[in-house]
Length: 383
Image (cartoon, helix red, strand yellow):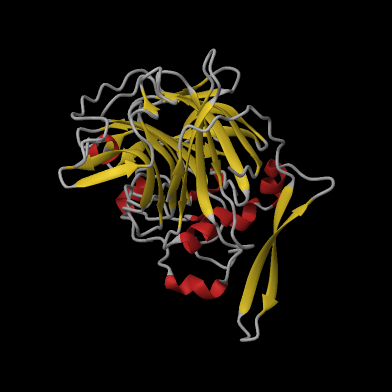
């Protein structure tokens, strides 16, 4: 992990990407098929949303099926999704919740689909989208998925979940965590829901690395955060711990992420990122080869009145399961937002053995809904 702090940045406007990832099959000297991916400018270029519509049916296959952009010879080393969900769970299907449409610049409108269960037996709360489609606010205990559509009714359709393909791309958004204290978790993450054909124990197609609803899949946590702590994590589908960066967390005998400090990130006007005010998040997915992620790079930035912009950067690289995540990102991962609390949130915001973490106790003062807004998917930004 590498991190840098307090870097002045100049505001900039990035144009939407005009690239298409193209799979090219070839044969190595060993006779084994090899797949390569290349990024080719298109003139004229369809929008990412149009490209998604054109290939939508290609996602109706198992997670480790034959449509991977990467080497098919490696697929047999990975475990597919479970298919043994009890019949009574599948039969008890709640109605899908539709929260409204939100604009994602560089992609188009997405529908916010609400989960009915957070985990089996734990009902999910609601969420709201502003009338102009700019702001999404999950209520406490809510979980929502970025979808292509949300017809509602008595079923969740696997094909509704948007497969954002972000290899060599950048995702931007703004977040307000000002009301979320110790013990609260405002999360935005990506999981391989578009490739999961099996209904989970939560009656939809949700999956994650912790198997919260009984189905495991690759997961990239862009943020698990509150106004005191921030954690970004990479997870292979069987790696619940993963590797993390950011600031906060720890117990009596261990320390959490320490890429930044309390002076860099926290509810303090003098901090580089003053979490009492909204701030910008930029996450990039650069490639080291035509088919392999180099890292997941993150930048938090904020402009304050009368002061130069300030930013914090960090990077997750060298992960043992980066090949699996490269495949998952190439095939498309769905964005998920959630808001929850727990008295056992020390892994995120605890003080740690070094005493440098932010929260001595988990007071769980999780106020009004946090807000996500101004989403965009753009050409790769390197920082």
